[in-house]
Amino acid sequence: MSKINVVFKETNKILIVILIIIAILVFSVSSFLFISYKTQTLSSFINSTGVIRGGIQRYTKLYLLNDKGIKTESDKIDSQLKKLTFYIEKNRNLFSTAEIKKYGELLDSWSYYHININSLTKEELLLRSENIWNLSHEVVDIIEIKTRRCISYIYFVNMIILISIILLVLILLSIKMIVQNRIEKEAAYDKLTGLYNRNYMVQLFLTKKEESEKSIMHLAILMCDIDHFKQINDTFGHDIGDKVLKNIASILKEKTRDSDVIIRYGGEEFVLFTTFKEKRDVLLFAERLRLSVEQSVIIEKNVTISIGVSLYESKNDLSKTLLQVDTALYKAKEQGRNRVIIDDLISNLHEGI
Picture 1 (cartoon, rainbow, N blue to C red):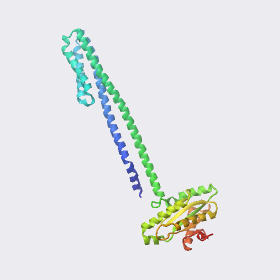
Picture 2 (cartoon, rainbow, N blue to C red; picture 1 turned 120 degrees about the vertical axis):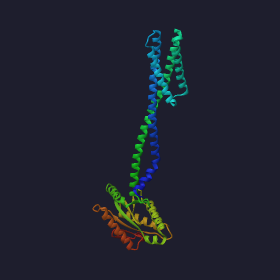
Picture 3 (cartoon, one colour; picture 1 turned 180 degrees about the vertical axis):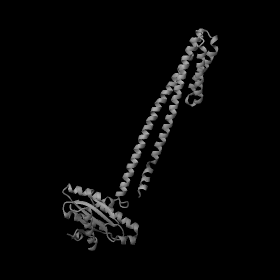
Picture 4 (cartoon, rainbow, N blue to C red; picture 1 turned 120 degrees about the horizontal axis):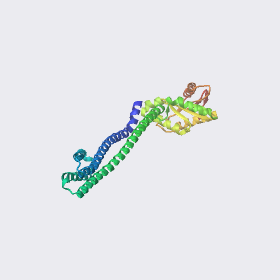
């Protein structure tokens, strides 16, 4: 699988989540802008209502004092009412029916008061003036409550925006990590058998080498080759050949320790890194692997493996050790296959030692 396909496969799994978060962000930003506009409108509404509330008191006082400034104050109140009426008509969706009705009462009270002020007694004048002031105060209270709710909602939306951005960043970082890990896994593992592939072999060798150097154990490298594998492919087909590879890989995994490392070296060859105390231990170990394959029923034809073994020496590097184990494997094939050879020493353990 190519890196591009890996990236596409992994990102496609999380694409819906990203789209949802982006949708939440878009909705949240839109809501923020709308509520901000609504709050500004309501603030203007409160200011205008406050002007009216104070204006009513001044208007009544000026009337009682027969002050010529009454006309100016009346015009100021009318101007603010027109402004409020414009706000309400333009933004009726922002107001409930009860709020619009309350504002209508304020308009009617002012209109009656303004038109009939000359026919009102002083007591009626003060009573109606107080009534208008109370209506203005109620309207202000209603709008202030609405404004506080809007501000609270703005804080809430801001938190959603912040959390969404954080989640989006975390998801993008997660995608990067997932894709990177998947690419590394694809580079390290054989797709057919699930074993490590040779691309990761040097790193695995260095790890096992370090482990053996820190302990009393010695490191051995085994190279296994399926006998007559080309004949199996030619006779039964490549699908059966793949089945044989997978089955032998399963046998090797089953018969080895968790600390052992199994690598599909290429084609029908497998490399194992294992640790041991005595040479006989690694020979017995290799022989058990050989017998397990020989005794298993994979296909109609009896499937066997040949194994070459090399004991790692600190003066050698991996390439030289692989050359030694490959030579041992070649000798196992040359000696008739289905056997274990360790370096230059022939060990036909299946015949007994």
